[in-house]
Length: 246
Image (cartoon, rainbow, N blue to C red; front, side, top):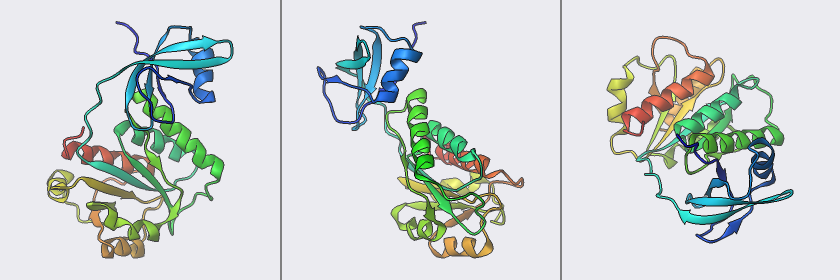
C-alpha cells in the first residue's frame, strides 16, 4: 500500500498552479525528518480549508510546493463542537489539545476557576498548544486547525453560553441520567455545542449554579469520577457520536 503523502498547513489562500512555501518548522521537518526530495508528493491545506495535491521543490535549504490539483473536500460536520477546559496541572493540557484535535473539536477554551491549581499560562505555553493542535490536525488528516483561545476566567466562559445552541456542563453532582437518554434531547436541532469541564477538583457549587443560571445544562458523565484530562474527551466523544459525527 502506498504511503500517504505528508499533510502541511500553509497560511494564505491559494489556487492550482501556485507555488507555496511552508513555515520554517514544517520545511525543516520535510527536509530533515522526512528526507524530502524534489518531486515528492505532499498535501497542502490553505487557510480556507482547501486541500491540494502538490509536488515538492527542494533547493538546498529551501522547500516549496507546487499545487497540482485541488482535492475533493471532506464533508463538514453537522455540529460545531467547542471544549472549555479548566486548566489542569503539568502537561495534561498538551494531551487534551492533541486528542480533542483528533476528535474534531473546533475550538478549545482554557479557563481558570476557583479550584484551578495550574499556574498562569505564559504566551510560550499557549503557542506550544497551538503548535500541538496544528501537528495533531496534520497527523489525523482533518482539513483545519482548531481555534485555541487565550485562557479566560470561568465567569466569562458562562457569559458566552449564548453563542452556542447548547452548553453542556459536566458536573459530578448533576442528575445521573445516562448520556444515551440525555444527549438526543439536548442536541436536537443544535448546530453548535460547548462542553465545559472543570479542572482537578471539579467545579464548585457556586460555579455550577452560575453555569446553570447562564443557561448551561448540567450533565453527568457516569458514576465514576474521571480525571479532568479524561472527562473532556469522553464528553466530546459521546456528543459527536450522539450527533452522528463519529
